[in-house]
Image 1 (cartoon, helix red, strand yellow):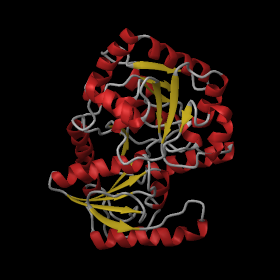
Image 2 (cartoon, rainbow, N blue to C red):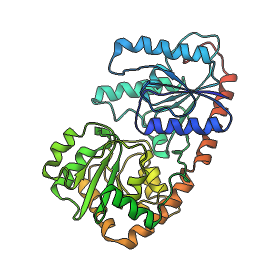
Image 3 (cartoon, rainbow, N blue to C red):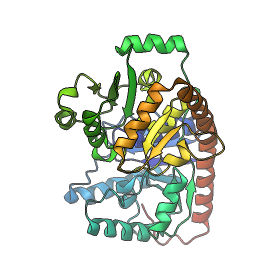
Image 4 (cartoon, rainbow, N blue to C red):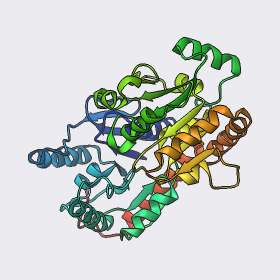
Length: 377
């Protein structure tokens, strides 16, 4: 099968998922291509470059042209559009003699990302319209599927989960953890780890504001991810550099996951978070605000909880749940065991990728049985 992944971002969970997809698909014998910005860390498949800018509408015709030319040259069986902007550009109508199967994966619907009620209505109208131009929609969790349906997106969403290599992301031994904590300079302190790019969506601003009011005693809050830490430094005030640190992006998140006592996820909106899935695979309890997939990953299901989920704006409750976990060793030990079991059930790489492949096969069948008078890319 020849697959073209289309992505607009250079960092973060989306590019991580795309890389995981591409690596597995290449190993499985598929021909994989990735259309991405030239600064994106593409690590598998044949790379092709474009430079989409969602805040530069005058560039949209050029972006569409590059995408269509790439599809025309490669003649893929499947075009997999990742996130909202590629989903727009890749599902505009065009007249073409034939078309690939078009698979759209929102990686969190953009309804909540729109800054105004008008923007949210327009986003919903577009997604309802474009759903008819999708041969399949992939989502990361059941909440995301339900959200699409609630906004009138009348197309079946296939829940596949976040793909995590649970051999690569696995618990460290106590001695390994002690060594890593010493190397990172956090020995003797509890570590609350927040992983994700520094952005409003991820909620570090409100987490830091709550922390400044009442830090967890004896703990350090680590904000791990790319982005400008300046605004967060202003919010943290005297706690910055003392009980709040921002190491920036790292090539491998595992040492910080091993060092952490609790992973905290204060996002305002999400699909299923890659950082949460990886934390669970490493046997780490997670405390999160309620977003798509949070309860499914952390609290619901056959296993005991692997942390706690609090109200969307309850940052006081979020830190209280973290405080409980850094002071109750028996609780965190039990949640660590549950975390690993949950990750193996929901996010194991081969199982997720088999589900993705099944979606592709179904989309190809849909394409072959439908008229090819109007293509999406």
